[in-house]
Length: 194
Image 1 (cartoon, one colour):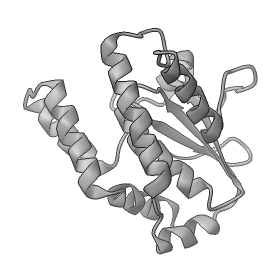
Image 2 (cartoon, rainbow, N blue to C red; image 1 turned 120 degrees about the horizontal axis):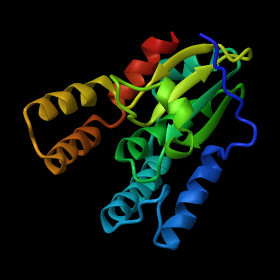
Image 3 (cartoon, rainbow, N blue to C red; image 1 turned 120 degrees about the vertical axis):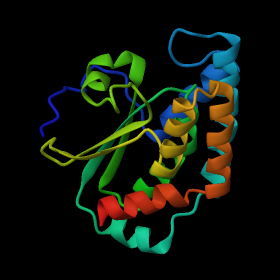
Image 4 (cartoon, rainbow, N blue to C red; image 1 turned 135 degrees about the vertical axis):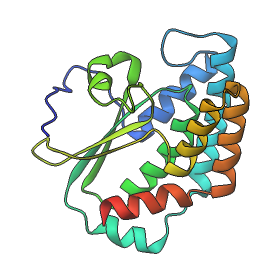
């Protein structure tokens, strides 16, 4: 499948500039998008803390390191938003993986500014993020991934099906991320990239 979008003229970020942008907004008591409600600011607050922690502590396992280092050049385009908890839990890991191969370029774009792209890469009919779209040098889609590792996704879908309140679902999913320590994500990427 060909990625038929021109990214020129769109706001996009490296991981470093994405983090700087989020930190700048955070200092101004804002988040990405137009909803700067107390709830959205609380989510963004937690996510700044999560990303800082993962930037310092995330370690990629050795078998995955070898697979990533052998990959041909590619772009990992990631749709995200600062208020998204799953983005905060996963994007630092994606960045750590990409740093292992100078041929992998990470480019982040905001979901709500890029509805046309998001509409073509939805998950089960939803605009769930983060959404990674891996592209080769000819803009062919190599694979997509997101919004969360299968372990968390299955738990999320079951709790949602059971009618559990969002706050409880979110708490359970983030607890699962904490216990898992990146293992589910790394296993999925090992299998995708191998």
